[in-house]
Length: 361
Image 1 (cartoon, rainbow, N blue to C red):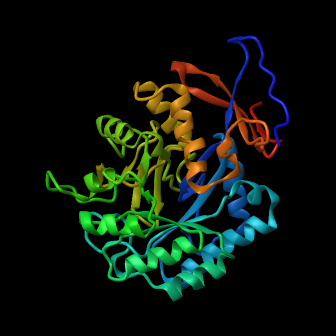
Image 2: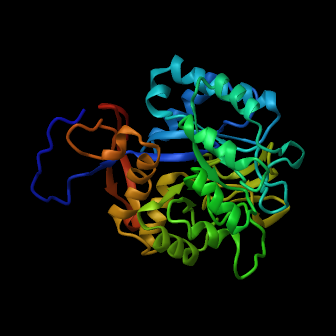
């Protein structure tokens, strides 16, 4: 715990200390895919340690729509890794289950397998939660399925944060879901139809719900800067960043094969697209730090606000101890930073629960 904070005279030569980054949607990183069955527990450890280099001190491995037994294996492996390896236990704050209770429609469904999309099933969710030892902290679902309102209430009573995503629900349905306890929108603006009515539509309706926190991918590819600006202005303190990173984040440029997306190309600039159609994104290959730097570079947020959107705010949503930031009585999960080329923030060291877990050399 932080016992004392002693201010120092301003000195541009000193590094900046900031709360550790918190990413609530990480599908994989540095070659580790949390959606490749079976997941090896050692792979979860490897991804955790690579994320430290990016200043990430807490994150949610994200498991998407799969066969029931595959989801069970994947969440069990992640939960086991949390208990087997202290490094994982200190940084993996839980699991984000994104599906399979989502819209089957083309567009909102995104890259999820249509054949495996299904209506909310409480018994099956309990089976997965038992395999995860209660570690499923966030569940993304589409509230238009019959019975969703009661399902959401049961999830919330168990302490699960219900997030609306991959949905084409109408305004009434969204309002009912929020009244039942849904409190978040998953990567708002993505996982949607290419064309929507001017109004009403399910993006406006989620923005209009004051109680919904809004997760945004800030990589500069998934949302235009003008859209990010509007989302941020509407949601204010309830807007935050996620990476939605795939296993190719942190990997060198090249041509790769993904089990979702197939043949893909990762450019030197970090853009991940389909090999046979470069205009279509194949996911995100950039970490959360890139999103922070993008907001700063584009003038959408000050350095402190952009950093809060990727640290304090997601921590607050989940009620993590790190929501206090750098304050007396809070755990020391922090990053040391300096301003590199073009004013981009770069990580010099990462601390988790008071221990330096990575340092640039």
